[in-house]
Length: 292
Image 1 (tube, rainbow, N blue to C red):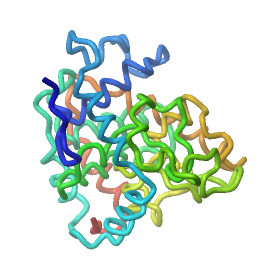
Image 2: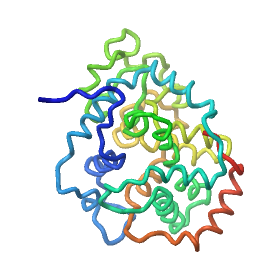
Image 3: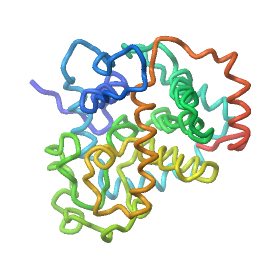
Image 4: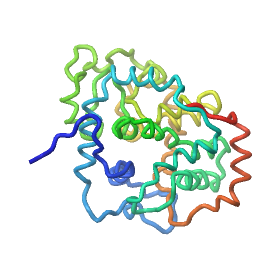
């Protein structure tokens, strides 16, 4: 007998199961990680789990245009919590996952591996900082948000759901699926209106973008805001909503994503050695406290 989970259920054993699914769908032969094949990541010795499918069933059922606008109103006030930047990483570390087969590193160490891989390749320091903060938005889980409203491939709401989105069959349960406006190609938007005018499904990408939008340059902000927008930067399903400027800026998103997906290794970053560099970098770009 199948159990139908509620909207607040926890379908994944960990948030990393979503990343396992990404690596199965988008293995990258040009991985920046040396000495480990991409197919060796997230090796649970099992096929894609039913929990991942259940995650996307919930995600695709409840990520409506109305839901997204309400979540933006609720969370983008940033009135939940304020803390020093480095305390924010301690807060994020409450999401440490013991079931991840690739690493037992905490969240800060994973982010350091991403940012250190970017730094090692000589990219601009603002991109290094984007690597350090790109998953900060996952703190939404610590405010009681369900997984399907924190991670997952993002996609536009308020217009037709593309069949290039993972598990598109689950959208039939979404109230917007048969809406006379939201089910059309452009929905509430105009052709090539630009992604800044488009609402994507709610999650950690938009949240961290909004947190950082006054502090980092535009290429870094595109990396933060769209690194989970796989239906576009891997499938090119929403060219009709993107502006010429979006297409140009997505070169940065495409540059960033391999570092996000393929930078993990078993060697912990030496935080004692790295701390002076990152404290100086954070102080250069960000205020002393962050609002959540």
